[in-house]
Image 1: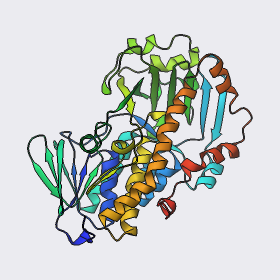
Image 2 (image 1 turned 180 degrees about the vertical axis):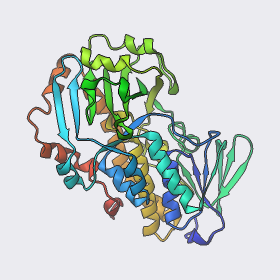
Image 3 (image 1 turned 60 degrees about the vertical axis):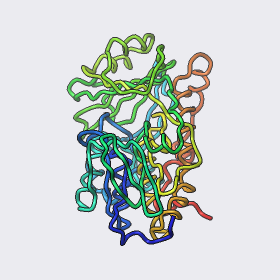
Image 4 (image 1 turned 90 degrees about the vertical axis):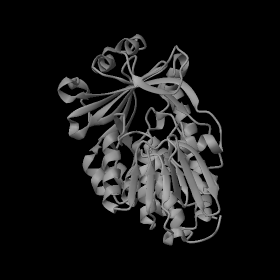
Length: 403
């Protein structure tokens, strides 16, 4: 790859995928002086899903992408994170996320609707005037030469660019071409729904990111959109052979997996009228994300299970780090991509592997459950914060790997 400064090139940078990672990458690229063309396979832009949790690292990324004010206005700021045993209501752990937390990490902990994160990024993208989005553009293959890349879509269109950011999700076509591995289906099924406050149990209307952990299952709830709605998420180990998929869910299926949990937590699975069902998958961590003028980002690089609540956060961190790597290398793609990869591989792999282990802790049964319930007994907030430093202490100023 030639070591030219491409900001004078008439070719845009191509981004495969118009989700959170793709639009965040586009914003980061524009801030480095590039025009960007985002290729989104869906007929129209939008995010399916419900609520997501945002650690302080997410807010650091929002600020670096220039949308901090927009995103902050849409978030709900929690007082604590709390874990209860779903069998007997025992409080396993409680982490305050108020003033001391903010002082420690420089940013808050919050919850937000996934569509509000995506919408905030899109607002920032539209405001630049330099990001074009092509919908109905499903990447089929990538061609490269010394001068750039060409993406061929399923309907035969050809898009030319100076480089390609593969941010096309768990089923990434870019990763399939260059890596060729398969997603690792977990066997864990996640049901998500949003419930209006009026229909949500008064004794669970906490301003907290709350989880009820049980044998081979757990339930999550927290407020959204100023407390007018509540996010409800239930997860269980499927008794069936699963494939990665998203589809409408069945209330009867959910009810069949939660026998034996306490009445207070059980209220949650009686609430939703409509469920969306995810059969989850992650990817084995890989050390190579760069393939000539193409590089992976977000779930395409490091798809993770949901147990660390870091999927969207990691994708936005990727985008910011890519932008910083371009800044540090005077926009030379080969050097920037190498620096980006070096800066991100170990951190994102730690999140992927930690998420798997956290899923085991959440879903402990028998004696393992008893051990889990003893893990954090008597732990002070400061000790919790120390344990979280590696994750929540990320900032744009320290995101690049040192030589």
